[in-house]
Length: 149
Image 1 (spheres, rainbow, N blue to C red):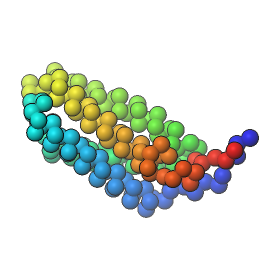
Image 2: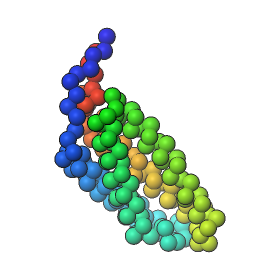
Image 3: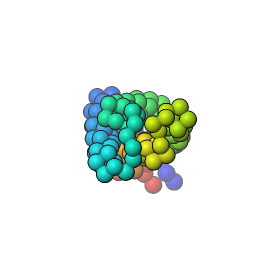
């Protein structure tokens, strides 16, 4: 029989620290990806595929994920599971504006939009890894949702 251990919910101070680190890692990872893509000439650059929007939206996505995870940790029995499901749904939904760029931005190309979509995946993966037991964020068994059998 599984019993739930007393939950030590993460503090907002801890979440802030982890959120800032997550935003930094996601932003640097996407900036490096952008540098690689632009340096190799794999895609034609266009406005959304430049440093200011990539850096801004990578950081904003990570900060938003921090707030969402904080709310789940405070209010949901299985915050990790809920967060992963919501992150997957938001990731899929985040592709819609990228695809829309193909119709409204004359500089957008399919390879450029695919790179933007990959950048969304990078941010989502960093966030899931930072906040859940699936990644490096919390040592296994010390998470608020940890159970003993």
